[in-house]
Length: 115
Image: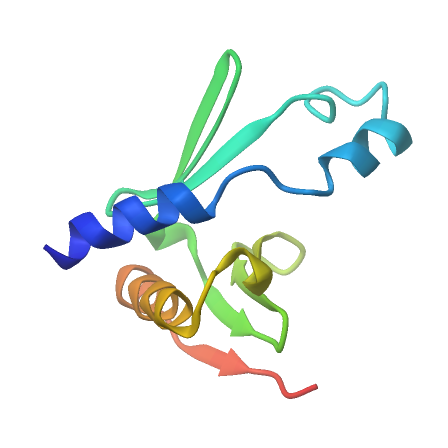
């Protein structure tokens, strides 16, 4: 039941990323910069889909979870991370559900950065 709720909640939460307009202006010739895309967090991993493309990162790839005042960083390596802005969540319940889900699925340690 909770899994269904989480999948539904994340599908609603993770919609368009507002920085796409900026990316289109600043990176007009970069492949993928002008495409809309969706990111889903589910039992299988982190899924990214856009027109004509799909990718999945399995949870085993996530090396760390870093939480700041405004973002979650799901670290894939020293220079790569999936960044999830906290402003995407409509309330503290959704934020806590996402936090718990990510920590359970990734199975890694976490750190909260103050400031």
